[in-house]
Image 1 (spheres, rainbow, N blue to C red):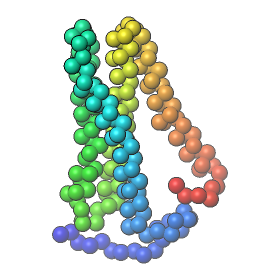
Image 2 (image 1 turned 90 degrees about the vertical axis):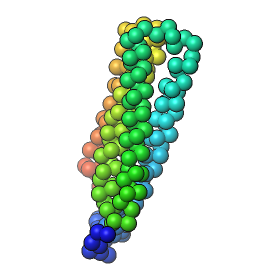
Image 3 (image 1 turned 90 degrees about the horizontal axis):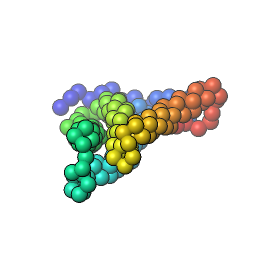
Amino acid sequence: MDEPRATDDRDVDPDDGRLETASQRADRNWNELLQEFRVFQTGTQIVAAFLLTLPFQQRFRELPPFDVGVYLVLVLLAVAITLLALAPVALHRLLFHHRLKEELVAYGSRLLIVCLAAASLLFTGIVMFIVDFLLTPGAGIVAAVAVFAVVVVLWIAVPLVIRRRALRTPHSGAA
């Protein structure tokens, strides 16, 4: 078993209003991260299930070869996202009782960012695939660009603006 880490009962950040040790902070961050993964997984697993039903639809046989290729890429992407989103759970199970919670949080956080980036491609690709099938390939591309733009605004631009504003103005609550 690994060497125990030095314990520190001091407040890890006296200015954040939380009164927690480094270990308590790591536990809280891990729990928050797991909750984010739960929400993320639910959505992406529903999308993956939807994709897996498509070949059993009668009109699937009408797809041109390019669309079948796009479909297969989307299925592989959905499976990869599911596996990536489960990786922190497997890592936690293997490192349980080794006092590596801070490392788990750092790894899980990076992995969630990768999952979100992959999910943005998945959602964009699904919209392109469906609109292409129902309308035209050009309409599919336009719809995909629009979805990707919304993802960039909601998942990147808005959080950056909120963070920038929060850093400029003092606030009383800790996040």
